Length: 150
Length: 217
Image (tube, rainbow over all chains, first blue to last red; front, side, top):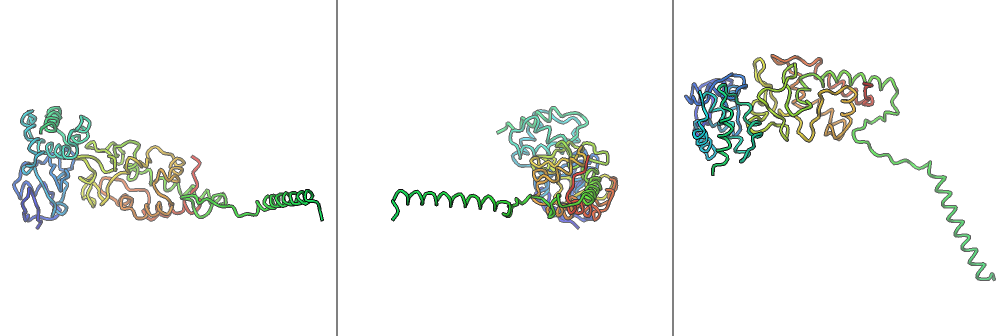
């Protein structure tokens, strides 16, 4: 049994300690905004925040996540999160949308650490999140738009 | 009673003789003074000049054995020439576009500890882990990649390269640093280092104890 604090709520999850967090989020807590892409931390679709850092939930066992502050795309409700949401809508970023929750979670860390990122900063941060539909240019634009929002 | 001028001449002459005598004695005594030795940081207890050629050769051979560990992917992958860590037995550029970052801990959403956790993860090609998983920081890159045994040995004797003040610190590092120890743990999907951790520590100690000799090439 693992105690998880997700999006501000505490949950008791009946699952073994080595279960990937991604499984617990999607199957046990029915928070399906976070996606399975590769299962080996290569694509970034499973990105969530753990104590403010972007971790790949497909390789994060519950033993690591227990007791930490987990935020998924459903719970990204702070100022930066709302700006990113607005920018993503304004720029019509998603195509299929599958990778986008991971993209936004990664972008959130960027804007938290650098309020006005350059294109290179965006490249350096976002390079680990893959988009098969190729929405990279819109993602970049949306990050700049979010950064410029007051 | 002597005239005053003569008395003054005698006094001056005496003074000059005394000065000359002091100078002579000082000059003669120089070779017998104990030379002040400057403590060479990182030096072994035994100066190289006092070590015979056989021991120095053994020291070189010990380093050449340790070199196979330093240059194995398990070590060299985190000591590359660039700011992207290497990955796998073929030392390709690490996936996901991760970078060293100023502190050697990655940057933004791609920090090392985001995926590399406190312990190794089971399964082929899953990220290994230690509590302090990271690369050397930018100010102290400690590049191994591309170095010959001679170059690497010379660098290890340079405090600016290693960040160690003494060889004892280097020994402590190879003996106890979790990142080093973890490299010797067999994991699915990565080749083993060609000796055990105990053997590695032994040859590093031998290299240092026998004069930290620099290989010829």
